[in-house]
Image 1 (cartoon, helix red, strand yellow):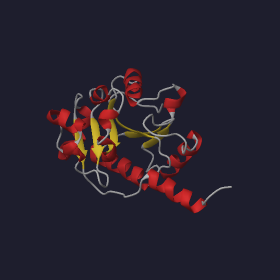
Image 2: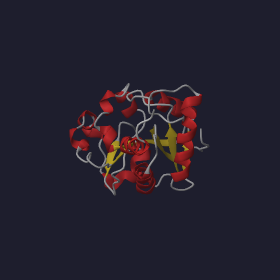
Image 3: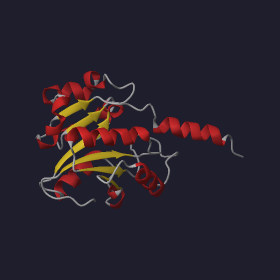
Image 4: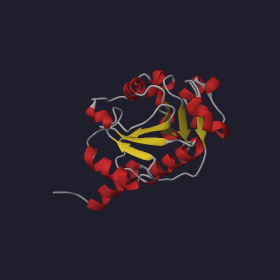
Length: 201
């Protein structure tokens, strides 16, 4: 787990990053800039419980690829979840909170995840552990209006113009941040790579 000190503002950006791409880099850059974060933890997960693992690259490869595109020294690529046998976001956030008292964390997710957020294990617990910053992604701009999470926690939504105060708010608190969007997706990249390789004997 990266080193932090009390009072620091830290974004938590987790995913399988299979593979990481410019869209992930853009989400990290927007979060760092709009919330003026001291650090962003780019957390490469062992796997996504909601997705198939048959096309999953090794954790070592995904960490290496993530480090290659991480935008700047404030981004700390880490895979501590594997070392501590953490498989669900709710577990990870509870673990991080218990071991880092006084640090102001924000959970960061792309808007494409917001649509399905209510299917995550203990999604309400996640929303009530740390503030959440949802970063716009192509095709998901309206998720902040239609998703179950957005409707459930409408009362806790913060205007994106006030995103910089989000790390200092008590959960539940969340905002939807618009900005530049990349059309890249990990699944599309994997599909393209598979097509290039062609059939195997």
